[in-house]
Amino acid sequence: MSLLVIGATGTLGRQIVKKALDEGFSVKCLVRNFKKASFLKEWGAELVYGDLKIPDTLPPTLYGISAIVDASTSRPFDEDYHYITDLSGKLALILAAEEACIKRFIFFSILNSQQYTEIPLINFKLMIENRLKKSSLSYSIFRIGGFFQGIITQYAIPILDKQSIWITEESTNIAYIDTQDIAKLTIRSLSMPALENKTVPLVGPKIWNSWQIIQLCQKLSGQKAKISKISINLLRIFRNITKLFEWTWNISERLAFTEILTRNNNFNESMEDSYKIFKIKIEDMITLEEYLQEYFERVIKKLKLFNFQTNLSNQDITF
Picture 1 (tube, rainbow, N blue to C red):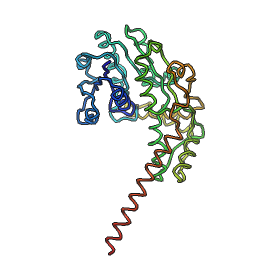
Picture 2 (picture 1 turned 90 degrees about the vertical axis):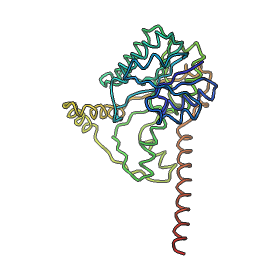
Picture 3 (picture 1 turned 60 degrees about the vertical axis):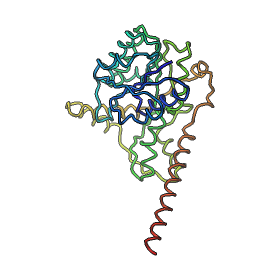
Picture 4 (picture 1 turned 45 degrees about the vertical axis):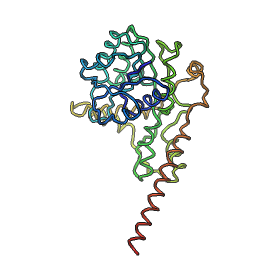
């Protein structure tokens, strides 16, 4: 089977490319910047030019392709955030896939998205889901809560750098998952008829809130976190103000995402049926404790080596 991976340079996309290549798949990656994606070519993938914002570039990239894995997304936190990437561009991609008779289309959406339709990006995800369900394509939709990798920039690095972590008293429970596990299950799903035309959750083995993650990071790093609290009511006021001006809409949506993560809801769904379909056990999934322990051990080892080399250099200067 030959794959076309959209969003191949992203946190999830690159893991899917790597796993697919390891499993012997022929992999093409839709890219806009060949230089930025050069590492994918070094791994063994073929790079093809295409841009979701330019629909005419999409059909040629589908030649010889059996399945599409769409791991791309625009985020309110990106400087080049554009709704068109997540709506118009993907609708054009689905249409091109239908015309090319693609055998399978994999799409990643957001867990509990039906509860947050007031946020444009999430609403667009739902619109794309509905378009896939009405299409002639065989599809699989995987809904995700959060990645382990996002915890590094949000919690681990600020603790190591002695910077503040902003949180509210309220905190959503999220079943974070490792992108390597998502990649493994995604590639496995391509050969599983039971997942055709299905929407299933992909979540980690345990739910975590902000306070629990901070405590875990403190324990593994041996450092105390600098915690700054913000009122959720103040957060809502800021959001309402930024909605008044077009140039602050991007900021407003960022705050909307932040507000979601401070509600006392659970970004979690049972994986019991998914485990059965994929024929795996919960023990086969990477835990957040394992992931963060490996991260902190690696970082602390590098810091010790750096300090050792710095001390040697200082001694050479002295003598």
